[in-house]
Length: 265
Image 1 (cartoon, rainbow, N blue to C red):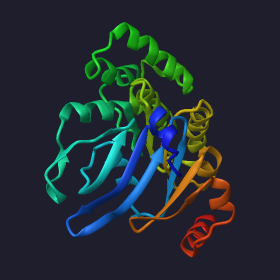
Image 2: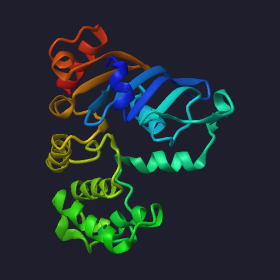
Image 3: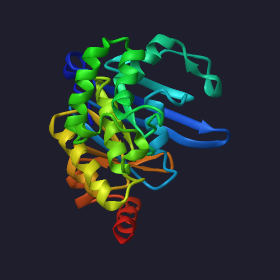
């Protein structure tokens, strides 16, 4: 994605990552990655296990600290202190602001077991954003309706199927009214029939023009919902482009091999 200078000034990317590096001890997971998503973009991150996809997403949401590179949210750069493995975000208020505007949906749902579904969806907007509880409840019920489980407000997570729990997690993310949604393998923990429930919700969100970064093993989902696909291999971007090009006419041998293995699985 080439940055048009005038567009960058009037409509800066919601998310922009430049030359990102991340290591765990001596294991270098990300070796200099550039990612950009403008408002309304859906960017799919694909690649083999261990390629750095989920780590990239967690760095984007500042759940992991990177050692090198720039990260910008709506044109605002993250400020850092320290260097290399000692590098940390310098401004806790900035971290909170970015995290609350980049809502993350995890593979394992991460719902509070002791709270009802409605309470789960309301918790962060009320306690973190200090929004009015009555207004949040109205929004939470609307988002639960939106993802198709409005009748499950008063039940607990253990009473729901995996697909319903993931849809509740998506409603929880939406209730933060974020600038972008980050999905980390949102369907990989689900049985195939439950997977389709969640895929439908994600497709609907993409159709609304939501800004999304999606780490996924589901090539059909990536092809159907994304504007841009990034194929990561061993911590680097091996190939990227529109889904039609990447899936229809991949240039790199590694991507061709990856897609063949995926189809064969």
